[in-house]
Image (tube, rainbow, N blue to C red; front, top):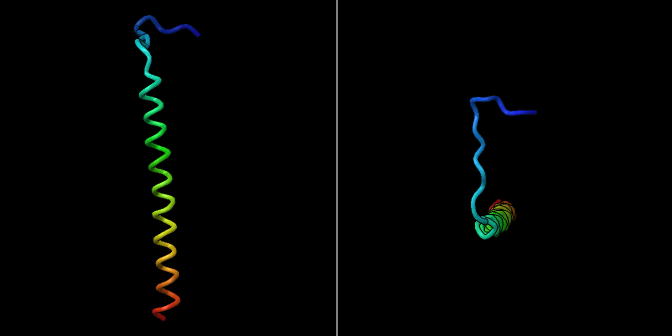
Length: 53
């Protein structure tokens, strides 16, 4: 499909692999942190339910 006459395409300049890899590493770290944080809160709530009731 051809582009309409009034649109322009921008070409990518340079290599952004380093930035992409950094973004992926930050995302993986964040999701791991959130997983363990959520499991910790659930564990604390379960222990509270056991010992405080």
